[in-house]
Amino acid sequence: MGLFITFEGGEGCGKSTQSRLLLKKLEQQNISVVLTHEPGGTSLGGEIRKLLKEKQCSSISPQAELFLFVASRVQLLIELIRPALEETKVVICDRFADSTLVYQGYGRGLDLTTVEKVNNMATENIKPDLTILLDMSPEQGLARKRSLKDRFELEDLSFHHRVREGYLKMAATEPDRWLVIDASLPKGKIAEIIWDRVSKLLLTTRTTQT
Image 1: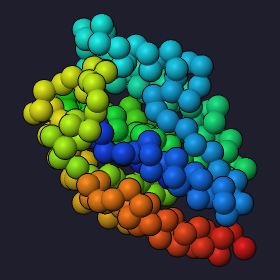
Image 2: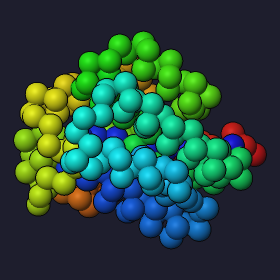
Image 3: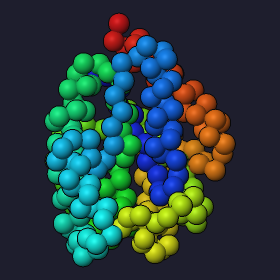
Image 4: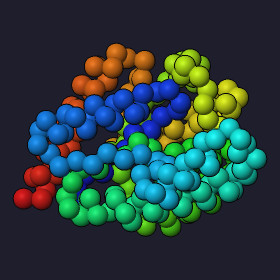
């Protein structure tokens, strides 16, 4: 199997920027790598993303929201993530199952055990080898946004604080899988911290596979 790396964090934390920087770094090392995102990454996922992000769809219930995210994830796993990992590629995903546990569980208030069971069914218990959490206060993250464009960005601050709290709690329970980084650090410094961890993980993976 390949190496599965995910990026997590609240709104405006810089996940997309850092995932692209990691992609570029891996390509420079001639490592086969795929970059994708959630929700989306497939035709079905793209349509679901539109529904979940649009301001006009504010009436989506937390339960419906949960299953829409999971439906997108199942399709992404089948079409892209699993095949790439089987080809021993590195897969970088901007958000994955942890986002659902945090946003729909901690944020929306759905039962955490139920959300976890649904997640496990969707992912067939596939977990990232490394999850990078770019941690930042909601006030800072939202201030980075030039305009509030989607349903999640428009939620009140208490929702975003619950999301951040959820992320930090989850990271504390699995310190070997999570890498927590202060997202207010300079972009280049964050990229250095990430590469230091990823390069070591790559070395360990290669040693194990040989």
